[in-house]
Image (cartoon, rainbow over all chains, first blue to last red; front, top):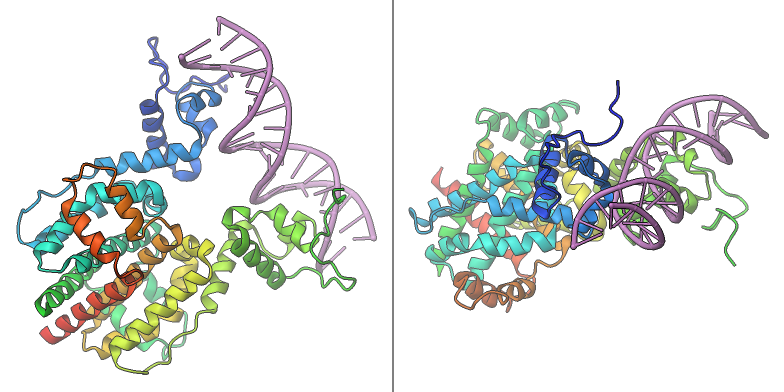
Length: 220
Length: 220
DNA sequence: ACCTGAACACCGTTCAAGT
DNA sequence: ACCTGAACACCGTTCAAGT
């Protein structure tokens, strides 16, 4: 009943042969469907109807495949129209677009946030609209850099938690309920109230950042 | 010249026998010294002068070792004195202590930020002083939750970038210099200015958050 | 030029056997 | 009760050989 060997995908008579693009596309599909742990040279090759070793002819090693994936995903990011709306709207649009990118590939979030070489190269490519918005807010240059870092780091932390699951208010309340009711009173109040507005945390965090930037710019 | 087998560490005549604590302590030392990739059941056992399989008598599997490590590191966190100083100082102290924890174990940062089960349990245990400070700022309960999330996510994003390296202003400027000089003008201005204040990004990010919290609380 | 197979040096973990 | 050894089903990658 079991197939004798590889060629499982959809070989077609006119099999196009391997290429960097075809390999990366198959790798992205594999990771999106089954997680990063499922990305294996052997499994990837099987999907492509090829020998595992053939992949090494197009990419030097597995690490190159993973950073190729990160780069490809960053290239997908739809940058917000520059200069559309006031600067707070621009910041919200940029952060939302970056978050969408992570949400579209939850199994790759960790690499997106982590792969320093690929990610900081990408950060430059996508970062200009964010910096421009913060400059338009009236911040001096060094503060633009710091505020942009805050936005990026917040989005990173947020999407990591989001992709990891377990971090919504309900599950935090479940955790709190495992302790005596007099412990952690402030956290109980806070999360009980926040639970009434599910999904508001991202926008609320950005609102605080924007209010802080406004205050800092006004103080200049 | 090569030793015949295991017993490499420091077996001593009165070898104490394995235990969960001894295993986790050895695992933490291994990760701190050589990175998470070096944490291998076989290598860990060798350090302990035991057979790899013996470890399974004290911990169910490797994943349990890693989350045990994360929990142990969180338990090390020195929480700031509650009620010491004004609320902005309390927020800064809390964020600084959390960051210190990550800096002390850079090879474990990814797990600290990622291991949802272990980390969100720990978040509850360490989170009360942060929430109390934000409540003292005058925020309503739901906003306390959102502001705390902002602080935590910012620290997560920041320490990840810090542990990953490559993200200081100098290396960003190097990246920018690989493009024509008319590209990314705002980022060039921003990072050139920020470079003059190395290491200021963490405190500057927190300052923006604190200013935003103050503005939000005043608007209540 | 591009692809392949066998082989190497690793993994985590199961299971039956030792003391 | 606690520890062990052999074995299983995997890994990424090197290298010599095929077409």
